[in-house]
Image (cartoon, rainbow, N blue to C red; front, top):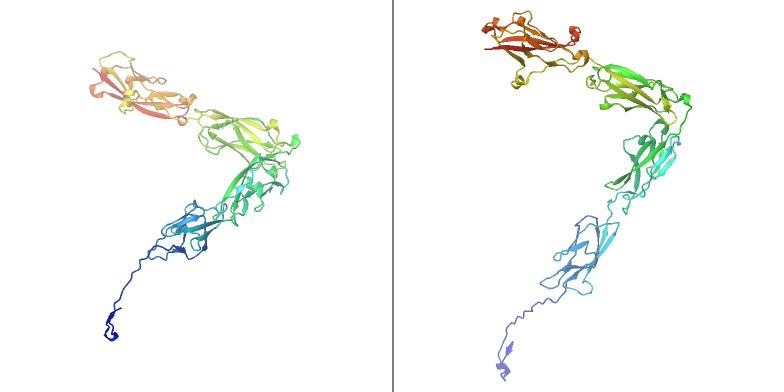
Length: 470
């Protein structure tokens, strides 16, 4: 408001106006955190988040978040949003709590509100499998060890920090005979004997022990323990198990079918302690190609059988097998624990003759024999061709006899075929034949086992062609 200064107050005049003053805001206030501390539970996984919030009283808010103190190798903060994340996996067993001091770049003071404290509580996860404390050495037991006897204790620990992830239980695994003879306490890991070791002649068992925790997901590890069995049972020699004889000679036809019984080997004293004494027979030599097998019969003898119908006299006329009798140490007569079997394969006429054609006819896929002679040649006994055949059989079954099946015809009378060599010769001159009768076609038979009956022989036929040359 303005006034004049006239002496006469009644004559003074005045006026009024409005003045606006703008105050410019300066960045003179530091950001501060509303909350001075918090607790954040965090699992062992990567990238769980927490949002630290600071306030800036200035109209133009500038806040840049930073971690002042704490494991920056495990955590990072977004400078713009204040979001805190893990950058590596956390491990409860190494450290179950982390403390972060969060501040801002703009406020470096230590005044209240300049920082906030974040406490991260790490939750335990089942991420450690049980581990056996020691690896036990192989053990040796006598076969008369009492049932229920403690053999050893197998202890495993779990590095997880809390239950049930660090609770360990035990069980036997695997598919061998060890599950029949051994058992383990599921809580204590104590291994004991559960069945009589004298029932088997085996000298070694592999016991596979699994230690597992009760966490989710369940984790486990397996340890193998070799156990050797020392058979100490003994009986007088006159009641020891033994083969009745130690040498046999057997004949078997080469066309024997699979599972044919070759020989039953009688075992003496096989009823002695039959309820607890095991008995096993095995082929220790001579069983080439696993052509034979041996088993224990219901009356505790050993029988040898043919596994496949693959006997062939021409390939292997004889086999020499050694059968071994196995039982508990001290129960077998060592002088009669082996039996030798000589198997003679009986030859049969199981192969038919096969013609061997000359190369020039095989080249054109012609299964015939060719020969030629000049019509004007008057010489007799000329070799025109040789018919050849072979037979895989041996002995009399491999012998071959040749003959012409055209002997009763006019054309057959011109030739003679040697029955042993298959050589074809002329006994007449071809000039007696007309041109229309040539070439001559002859039927030749090759028969094996020529001294046997027709039922005991195999025969095949082929064509021999004789042509004339001018």
